[in-house]
Structure formats: structure tokens, C-alpha cells
Length: 263
Image (tube, rainbow, N blue to C red; front, side):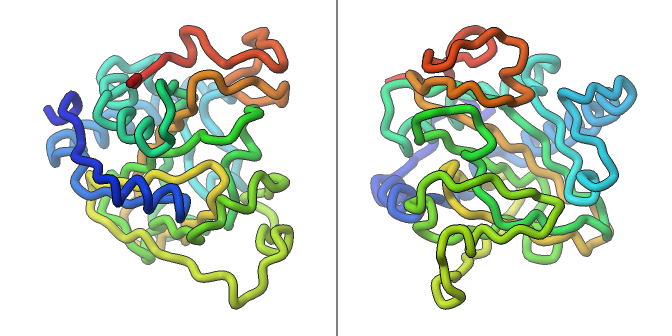
């Protein structure tokens, strides 16, 4: 198993991430590991749909046309937790951010249905997270080979430097570029086609997009969100933190947000 072996992240890759707001890394997981996660996700989606746990599964007709999203699998599935809390992945995140220790915010499976998966509109992630300080980032692991035909990610290099903007709807027509004051000549997307087992890491403020899935197979991905220890709660609602009696201005910590890598 590769999960306990440190990934050979280079200084150049760290520098690229900090300058551009994203980085693509190849062959982070082994083929057999990818196959195991696929099976686990299939079962997890079935389980959550049967229970119809609204806090864990986004399952409305409008949202389902974008993707099926299942969150916090690590709490219910021991086998998945080994991947979500993997030192191999978490240490990459810690080094990219440059913090002493990094915590898990949550995981989520992102499944675009075959043939009719709608596009995921250009957006930032950070405006949806109830955090004051920047630095949180996502690891997006391809569980199928991905390209522009089935909904791979695309990024706008350097867009994380725009800072946190207002959240945009993923199902309605909203334009993050207009909000950011960007003109057409400034919008130069970079597509992240890659093989299953490869991944991208992107800053929570980086503009990103995924096209619709026009192929005959679902497009499966696993995302893991990390944040630097010491990040404080801003009081906004979120399914992951709702009901935990968290105090505004206090560091986000505890058993629900474990440290997964430290220097």
C-alpha cells in the first residue's frame, strides 16, 4: 500500500502551487487502491440514498444533475478512512500550504452521472466554508480517467489571489468572473485531464470548473478538504459544523477535525 509512503513532492511543485493556486500530481495512488475506493464509494452512495440522510447526501433533482455528493465517508467506513486520513495525501497538503500541522475538514465523493451530467460552474470553494483565515485546500483524486468529455477540472491560474468572493450557485446562472472584475482576455482556463489515481490540489480561493459528463460511464472522484491548524470558525452555517456548538473566533478542532499531518 502506498498510503504511508511519502510522495516525492518537489520544491518546484510547491512553488507552482503557491503561484498558480493549484498543482497536478500523477500516480499518487496505485491501481488496486483506486479500484478499492470505487467499490467503497458505490456502496456508500447506495447506503446514504437508502437512509436519505440530507446532511450527508445532496440529493435534489437540480443538484443531482450537477453531481451526487456524499460527505464524511471517513466516519462510517473504516476502509475509506485509511485513504481520507492518509499521511501520504495529508503531508502533500501540509507542505503545499507550509503550515506546521494540517487538519481534515471533510471528504466528499463527487459522481457525475453518465451522459446527462451537467457542468459544475466556475466557482471558489472557500466562500462555502465557515473559516476566517485562508489556506484551506482540496485534494481532488480521479477515480476514473478524466478529460473534457467526462468532466475533468479546469483552473484559472493565479485566481486565488483575488481572495474570497461571494459564493455563487452551482445550479443557477451566476458569473464569478464579473464579480472578480475579470475581462475575457484574462480568462485562460487550464484543463486537468489525467489518469485514475492521479490528483490535483487547489487552494480554496482558486476559480475552478468541471464540464458535463457526455460519456456512457459515470465520472467518479474523491475530494478531501484540509485546513491549517489554528484556522478559526466564522459562525456561518455548514453541514459539517452545524450542531457542534462551535464558538465564533475559536480554532476549529476536536475529534471531528483531526490532525492528519504535522511537521
